[in-house]
Amino acid sequence: MKNKKKKIKRKIKWKIIIKILVILLIMIIIYLSIKLIPTNHIVVKGNTYVTDNEIIGNSLYNNYPCLFCINNHKVKESLLKNPYINNVKIKKNLLGEITFIIDEARPLFFNRDKNRLILSNFKEVETNNLQGVPILTNYVPDELYEKLINGFNKLDKDVISLISEIIYDPWKNGDVVIDETRFFLQMNDGNHVYTNTIHLDKLNNYIDIYATLEGKKGTLYLDSSSDKISFSLF
View (cartoon, rainbow, N blue to C red):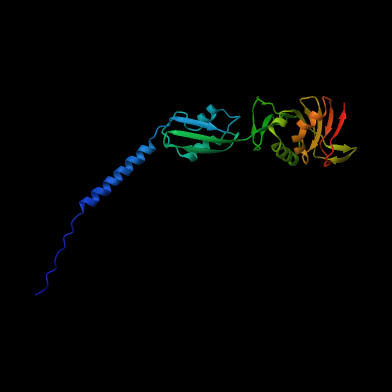
């Protein structure tokens, strides 16, 4: 006689299945609870030139949707359309608070030739608000123009606000160009300054230099590699 094969009946382990389902249900509830946390508070940090309202309005959170309903990448992408914003960090917490930490570009000068405000990130803005920045009054060759922006990037904000006009003014002796990188600056205090793209950072010492002039008005020469300061009275 042939051996009869015994059929093995497998019992369904309902207790284990129920436990797994319960765990999955708890995980889904937790996920949805976090996902649907309402936005209760919006904080904006690091901004000077772009208002809180502008940032919130462009952040996709102006209507206070649920905190995690919008992807951070989309929010960042929307905010970076503003030329003043170089970068933004986004932080969220389980209390319903979202924080935007803004890295802003600075206004450097107004280019009259282009009729644009030039920012430290090289972007240009059409605006009537010059925000206390100097005016570049004439055309500058492209290569020097980039160096001018880089040079102004190194200047203190307070120093930039002291400059009234920037004039590209190469130093010539007859038909011979001695310094094609030279600029003439008219200061708000009435003084004149000669500088160039190589030594533009010397302007950061202008406030200290001005204090030594004792109210005298004239022309300051900061276009030399010499540590000596040349000043001629009007």
